[in-house]
Image (tube, rainbow, N blue to C red):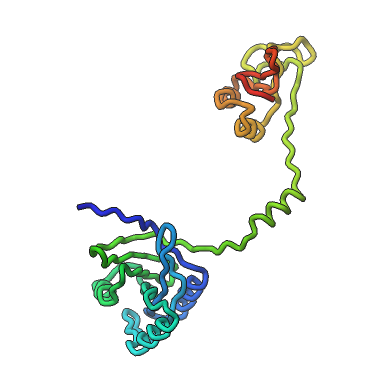
Length: 252
């Protein structure tokens, strides 16, 4: 039976991110950390990490079990011992991968219902996996890790300042006379001061045309023709209808 998981990424809060990389940089060899995990929208969130007493070599790390027990006691007093569901360790100068020792460590840590594991190195590489233990045992490997930035509530103050300080002007320059030669129209033209051609053309650059398409003042087909050199079309030319509509039923 194929099982589909809604977990698509792992999130790191800023505090956890800072501690993780500080301790990784300080360690000459491997180093391990444990972390708190909350269930968040779209994936688990590592909210904090703890450095245990441990003995480390270039290729191994052995955390002190008594120190882990003290951490669990403190978390239990705060009512959050069940959130200790992350194991993070550094491979120092080596590549990031899951060794057989890592697999055994994750299996021994267990988790209800899952545990998040990260392996990092001095280059900044990160590899993450989620081991689910309940209701069935399976592993989600190569999970993307993203930084969760807190909402500082600046959206509305920024909007108010923007409205107070920024004036957006959309201008179009039109030329009501015929154009010489046919750089724009592809047809023979009159002298610059001669008779008018079929219709006036909007002297619009690419950015202005894209803005006109976005506002619905120019159709995509008109834009493509203009880009191909077929015609630069004035979106405000009246077609003579009683309603004052412009070309293709668009209103000014």
